[in-house]
Length: 473
Image (cartoon, rainbow, N blue to C red; front, side, top):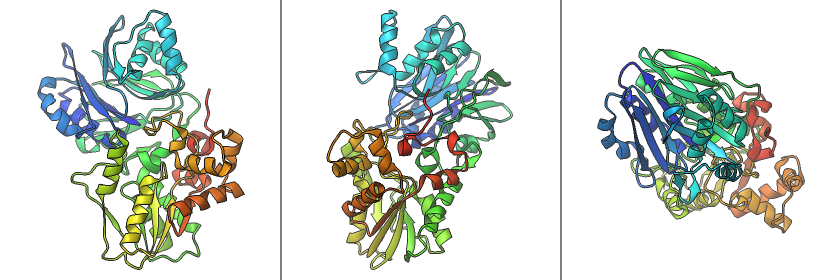
């Protein structure tokens, strides 16, 4: 995924942008950047996050931004951002949270129109630069944002820093959030509502799907009205979102409690000594389970937080596996001979979960009942940069289905049979997973229970990765 923050203030905003962008670090994997306008010029800084943390990378850059009252920052899971452009609209810097499914088609059209690209992400076109070009082709920023929303297949939320303020625009179908806050000195826009609370800002509202506003130090001006169709990513509540954040007024941690409670309701006969969660995102689900089941919550794995980050952050798979192995310390003092219910947010590749089960068996756990807080991930995400996977068969569920079907060529109809939790094929898929992972039992959350735990109508949620159902125009 990615996350961004922007501030328009009557006083210097450098520290606010620095710290509030840092509070989005759980959303990004690769690079980060900030851009400011100090009243005379645009100043930009970009660093890699593959070998360090945001604050350590950027703290030496802060003096050069001094005096700026307009600024944006981004934690990016893919390309270098912000991109700064000079066009007939003037100079501007832009950050995005985007996945452009038709980027090759748009790129070819632009090249045929004699447009050139200056930024690259590795050997690929920089998606944020492409968005900047689409904006620059229009007469106004408003029309430019509309052009982006009309042209891109996938998703794109953005912040555009100009000399006069910041344009904040949410994805056309609201797949990713954009949240407005304020204090006595100005206004902010963020991907995470909790990112600005420690800096003295208060929540104002979520932008609607496709809505765009302009932030200045004096207020928020409507640019584009919200559209009629919302499809916010359900995985924000299951995994991506920080526990203290809210989207559409619904708190992440509360949703995870409800999700865990729903799993407990499906285990009336299961007897376990305690419930546990894989740190970090499995913890809320496990607490909800333990509260509903009226069994203790314990930590057979403790995360060594001082030096080990989230395992999905490094881009290199070998390094991700190393981080996953090293960050969790088993606690043998109370695990030997125990029967435990373990909650995790999802199963993506399956390798880390299998390693964790082996660790539990090594410290004497007698039974491991795994409960997954969402349905099996069967359909690759078309709307967010969900992972670094290059093949659909990086998804564990897809590999198991392939093996059961005996072919790589899997139709949507066949896949939907496995996605439907009432079918024999679904039951067999889960049985095989449990055997391969050496689990005493394995259950996945039902889609209906995920929807109810979040609390929004199904038609307002993107559930594509589970049931291939989300709205595409």
